[in-house]
Image (tube, rainbow over all chains, first blue to last red; front, side, top):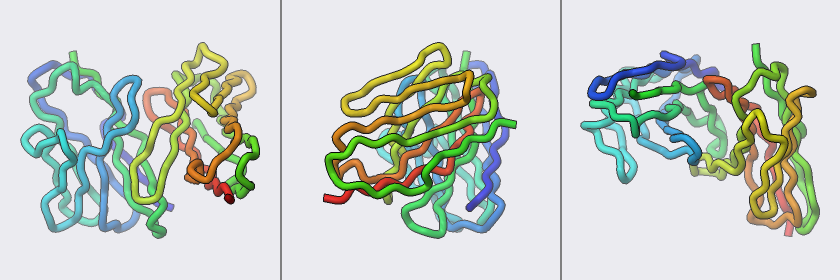
Length: 114
Length: 109
């Protein structure tokens, strides 16, 4: 299994500002995923980040709003830009396990935008 | 430190059976508890969310219970179908999600 840590664990931010969330994995992985869970809703995939290439964004998510970095095989960042209260969510980092059907999730970053 | 355990790790049953998945946690100071379903190659689907003040939630054939005092939650699936085959995860939420390892469920036609 993979051990995933995220920073910060939570934050309260003012609208219009940006927050960068870090995800660190204890092993090298090819694919990392970023999700968000808005209050009362299911997890939604934001983008897939492969090391050495640009992230692939899901419908409804754009790079200008959620820029992602993937500098190496154990680390990624997700920035939530120009935040609004609608961005208040839990943001989760995830990696694929050794078996294709498994995924491991980080503890999440709880973001509140005022 | 909160720890979440799911039992069993895997379960295979014939179609039509009623079944129970278990989730236990060590710290009763939780905000809520969520049950998710994970299908191969897909993201997570949230099934049920139980607030800390609630004792159960129902959605269709699914019923989730929460007993904070004993640190336990169960997910009851009625009249199981092959389409229910997936990995079921529970997550305890304080300000972060603490995940169980999941129960891999196979429903045999």
